[in-house]
Image 1 (cartoon, rainbow over the protein chains, first blue to last red):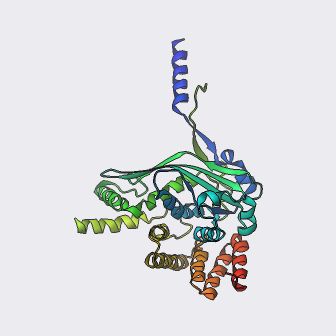
Image 2 (image 1 turned 30 degrees about the vertical axis):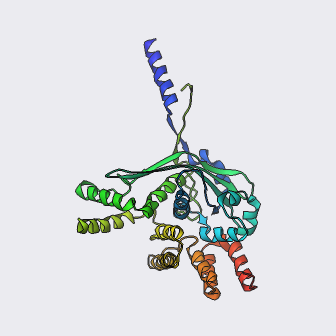
Length: 230
Length: 117
């Protein structure tokens, strides 16, 4: 009786605390695999954060990670300029354009809509970090349906990041990296890493060597569940 | 300290440039683009355009496709400063690599050919 009670308690706590479950890429975004969009048009993000610079960090760092996933990404500077010539001056109006227009004029298979809700930077002695919360959705221009989404918070920091150096060299690298990174333009690498993490949950696109081979790849799906019996 | 900083910086930059994905060479694309968007002037635009050229050259020497959008973006800047023939050549390069951009770039090509823009 006691054992059952404690197991139940643990399960409840785990449920309340937010247990990490894993789903496959295909389970998470099945329509990506049935539709297989090859090209993605990225629009400026709606910025609901207190950081005005978050918009620019997003827009200037998003293309690289997305293209690295194997998608054709339309040149964002060109897209924005063309939309501005049509009288659309901000992210809100651009994101309100009917999907069909992106299909007809640009020939895009899908459009990426992003709203930035949190952008927190932190500078400590040996590290700099960025905590970003976004609402991302990828919509098909063919069906209008949502193919993929992402709405979790992402944290990246310069400490123990992909630089992977150890010992004194690592320490020096971290100090310098941090010093370099806190100059205003050097949140760029961190912003790029944020996008990398976000797009890692997307299936590979046609230009990726592992295109079509990642249906069963597992991605973490952190769920905050209340009163879930596990 | 400055010397240490500079050498470490070199080390960090080298390591920092280590790609997590080998498909494309991006160089400092995001950095130069961010600088340009932050202070939109001739100097930052030129620096970004130079970076695009570096990406194209390095991609060729590494036998990699130029990343999506880079040729087209470079061509577009040329178009905007009136160098249409040269700009459209870069559109052709983009189209040769990525059929996904044909709808847009053919459209822009014909608009410029008609002298509309």
